[in-house]
Image (cartoon, rainbow, N blue to C red; front, side, top):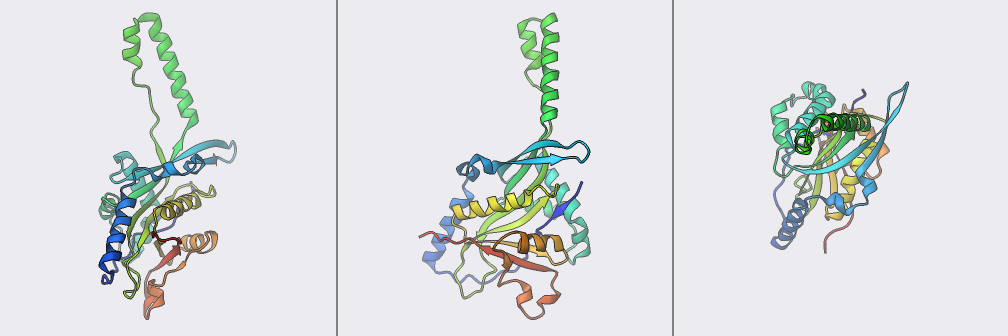
Length: 275
């Protein structure tokens, strides 16, 4: 299995708040509205909530993936798979960085109350069909030997395949605290993680498209993310394969001594403001 890794956790840089009371109130209202959404994907066409995957070389099989929106906290089974995928994709890079790898800290990030997620779950049609056949056989066997009440009791909980996470995005709706202090704070989407386990299926691009659509829908002004400079695949993905991303004005490379910093901050302006 090929691994595809992109973003990393955001930097800890902060700037003084230079936003007037009226603008600050509007900012708070915009962020509160965005964070209150229970399932903003519902407002998008259903085609945006599924992906088709062809797996295998010798005998390729087609599988479906579904995209789900979650507010923190994630179900434990989903959370652990996200952590495992992050460690497989990014573990070595973090270990070599000045930050080091701290999986408990990463778990805490994913459990943050403002964390929002898009999770791609792989649906195993074969497993579903096998489980359905097994259930049918159990019912038929039970019918030969048992009463109707016994049949219902014995088959009320059919076998359900475990969900498999093949990609996720962790993002938050926040004030742009990395922007120049001379400008008012604006609401932005900060992408903390984009982790994919299957390449060449457009999963990363699909998640980024959804994040941009949700950001536009919820009046965010930019999508911002942080990438290790050594993560050349991720840099190419954002700056070449996606449209509109560039090195942000607050990225360390734009300042004296910034060339020695391990990461770049990239961003894309989304466009509209709430009036």
